[in-house]
Length: 494
Ligand code: NDP
Image: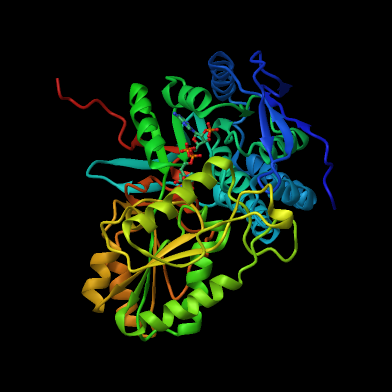
């Protein structure tokens, strides 16, 4: 299927109505593979955001959603998943056109998003809470309840999937929500809310507000009527959200950046390690928070590994996402393109060796797009900015290490702690090393697989809280103890 090439007029969805903004400054949304304008989106004002929060608050208090049984809410979520399947090709194509990623990646994202709704629909019906033995003739239960109004702020790298990682657990738990997509990639969020309307989720439960992070996102983070904020994006903005959230001590969940180590021991299967190292950094054109951007290779195989990786990296086909041959897509924006090219320049000036790539690609069909060659730096040292800072593009550094202790020290030599991997044929060694890596998402002899069933979150400056799994649901729940006196008589204290 080919989606229409007309410029879409995106709208906000507040209290079950599609609305524009009083702000006439529209956001022109582009296709990063061509720079063509594909949509216009509203830039909501602070007042419009506050109104959406009020609607979410009133709707929560009305009980129209929070008082439904878990089974009733789950039925809605199953229907949402089915509608995503029905509109799968349309959503995939729009995601590719708006974000610049390749079609195979978008297919994975949208399929996973439908499964995420099904996972939380099933989870909310599963046994929940606990019963405690306490030192009284008392029966104590612990139950989980929705937090209230959840503010959801999502990034541009996986626009549809990141929205769903937040919406599915928040709605399953019985909260009402206000979602703010990234200005760069708001297109598929509108489809998701069309689906919410179509399956009959009551008005006011799920609200969509498009606009600037500094206006809409900041208002959500600051509002005393928002009870939980869930954010994915840069560590810098995450810090600001934490400060803003202090006003009413709202629950916070922050999924931030990374500079994740991919540790390759000499006894690893070379072909597998090279293959996963390429996948670890170039999947999503490196615009992935968990990207394996620091490849640590044991000294004895370093040169052979570099040679093989460079050879493979040079063969990667970079191109428009809808082109079936493309293996790596575009940077999401001019600004992200410039950031990545600037880091490549910094790496060269810092004295690292540019082993391959390093350039913008502009030939033929790529001429107007934001494409960058898969890039590798060798001969790097830990103090270099390209080794320490998140680049968020198709750029990795390869560092040498000598033995286990050195590998662990280098792996942990960063402020981040999101992800990490170890490749080795010695299972005990791989497990020893992975247990020492200070990161929340790790793999042995693999890189990147992500499951709706398992918690996703970082150590150190990579964040607080979790997406996915039971933990992802708990980020949108309060915990209440209910103590039931089994001997109803006066205490006799006074
Ligand atoms: P940001 O952190 O700026 O943006 C993420 C989201 O937060 C967007 O929706 C953005 O809105 C919003 N936002 C921006 N400012 C505020 C604010 N003051 N209060 C509340 N929300 C706000 O990331 P960028 O898009 O600028 O990307 C910069 C870097 O962030 C990347 O290079 C990468 O390092 C990191 N990043 C990490 C991601 C991850 O998955 N961990 C995802 C994306 C980025 P808007 O942009 O619409 O104004």
